[in-house]
Image 1 (spheres, rainbow, N blue to C red):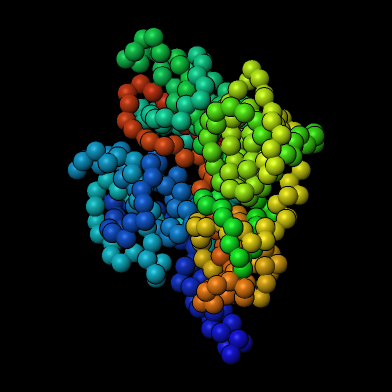
Image 2 (image 1 turned 30 degrees about the horizontal axis):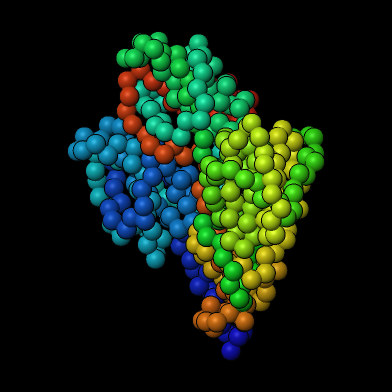
Length: 378
């Protein structure tokens, strides 16, 4: 019976992969109406396609371009899905571009967005600003800053003279975050051994600074779910306002704190505090530690039937789309879920929270992931 079940699963997976061949074509003035999962803002169709590729369940998309005239929904990137992996209907529509997720293609782990966008504002997500001579210098500053993911520059004829030549540096998460982490019997969770947990690579190894049994007082600037103190440290290391952190193991709570003036510590069981690594290469061996009895909920790409958690972990590591996983063993309360390996991911590419038209500004992305030839064409 088990062998037959495995065969059926493999056949269904094969048919699914065959039906979702690599299709990189962008279809201008074609709409894939309905079946929306959600919408995100995006400055262009190629960027929207990559958002769809990194979203765990998106299979195709429709992007509303700047020349759309029916309403004000410019730069909307509608992420979509159907059980077949194909749109139910395709209709001609001026001002939109549609296409497919690139999950079935060989994904590019180092995405380069070298295009700059005239008269387009990446609204929000600012963490620092300065004045620069032009948009090219603003982009260079963003590229050199480890935190910066994208920018908006107000040029010399911007409406408000007091902010002309102002360069706004902006942040978005570029490492995996788990949506919900909770204790649950009969499951094991963990990360792909290839998960990218640092914004950049450095030659110098970091000296670990974790303080077990220590809680740091003070207001939290942000609280996120995290699987371990080391995962919390990685989150702190790429966030622009995090000066140190405290991790509560009972609630899987990663408390990012922002106080550059002092660090007041207290002894407290079940808590670990620490400092983020700066301009050095952290030891990511913690990615190889499976979390027994811990569930990473949500963000599922798909599930497959497997014999054990080790096989699930290897499958996640071998799949370039997978960042983390949860495996359900035979001790789980609902036998319908036994032997399921849930492969998971979240969006880690630069993603402006809002994109709008604005005269006399220039927006663009960091060129950290671009090679020299791509940079020279900017």
